Length: 151
Image 1 (cartoon, rainbow, N blue to C red):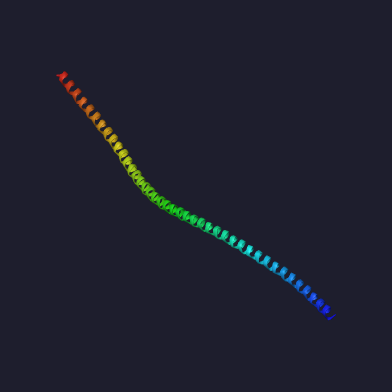
Image 2 (spheres, rainbow, N blue to C red):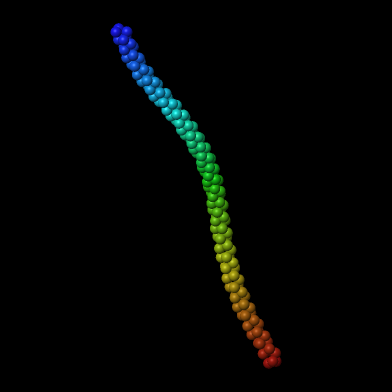
């Protein structure tokens, strides 16, 4: 009887040990599954980080290219502004020259008009004097003819 009792105790202990072993195996399987899941999550996270790093590098390259293009456009704008300033200076100088030439032309025109007026006045005076002298000479000539005819 003691032997049977001892067998039953051992059988109960064996069942209990098998149950614990089964639970331990299940726990181990669960831990292994969680570890595998964690490893998969780590790998996925590492892959996601790699994608993010690639995306960041791509964005940085695009940013650098955009900044370079912006710097180029600013240089072009600065060059155009300098060219425009030079052209405006040339235009102002040309306008001043044109104003000087217009003033000189106006003075020459006024001088020409005055010369033409004086010339016309002198010509009219000379013609009047010439006409008067011609009348005088004609009168003298007529008198002389009259005298000659009377003699």
